[in-house]
Length: 401
Image 1: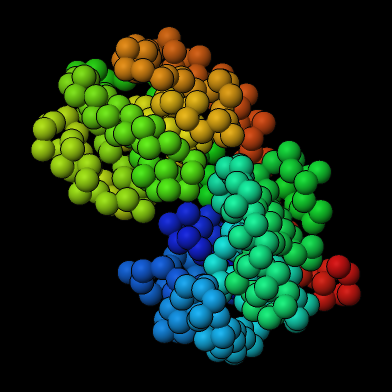
Image 2: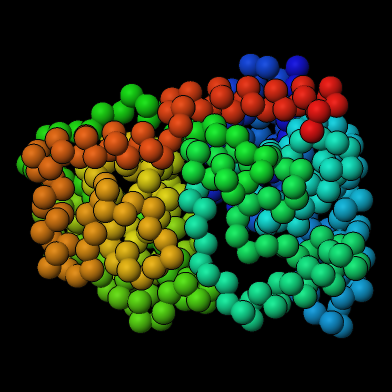
């Protein structure tokens, strides 16, 4: 029996995929869920497929995540060290054979657990949670990141900063678990395992005939456009254009029912004010149900450039990408599988086409070709991942690295 500990940060993105892995690991071991307490409290004491939850002390986390500024530096160092002692005591108690996270770059508790894994010669796995592309780093951001990393991580031995800008191994000893082989030349210790979360869609069929008599349904998945402006990914006028276009999409297509799935980091009330009070063909959802459940009841999915669109394709739902040119460093679809639009006239045309039988029959072929490229071991990813965890654990126990 193997013992595996899991770190989900951010929870909304990480927990579903980690739970899918844990479900398979249950057949050969025990699963510990570590609640890092770096986000709002979860409503679930022990998430599905985990045997036990261990919570990190909220006050210690809050103190350690205080602002990194000169006059509070020494207080911050003490707070991080107090948290480190607390985390180490929890990890010593659990004594897992391996730790699985979805990143080794973000989350202070994740970094501390990574340190514990290195010290105790336990494998630390990083499971790809979504697309890996990131926005180009500005020179000021780079200087700030490097200074924080050198000052705190290297000199003061306090793991506050991150070593690199792009997703990947902060530590050479970590293992990366990816969806396909396109990253083999980038990551040293990588295993191709597919995406365990998407195994449930393996038998999903594309719905060919859309019932136009009862209003076809379109799912709009929003993104935190204003926050993307703050991050320098979008320009302010582009965020305004996205909000405007969402309003026009609903307003100009009264014969379609729209479900607005609000991003977890956004306030749903803003969309309720903008849309629901003025339109009867619109429903707003915020963490109401899983993405899997939402996709079971829709005929087309719409976003700017979101992982949710990838999930839709896997689930057999055609997708429309709005203003893909707004995020020019990111293009996961490249015209192979999606409609691409940058104005309302074109959107209204392709929306109608997406409901037509002729297009949906072609979409079956597009989807098969796309998924053959993007997902290895489709339908068996959780099994492959669990077996990979066990093999590496056994290697490390026998002295291999």
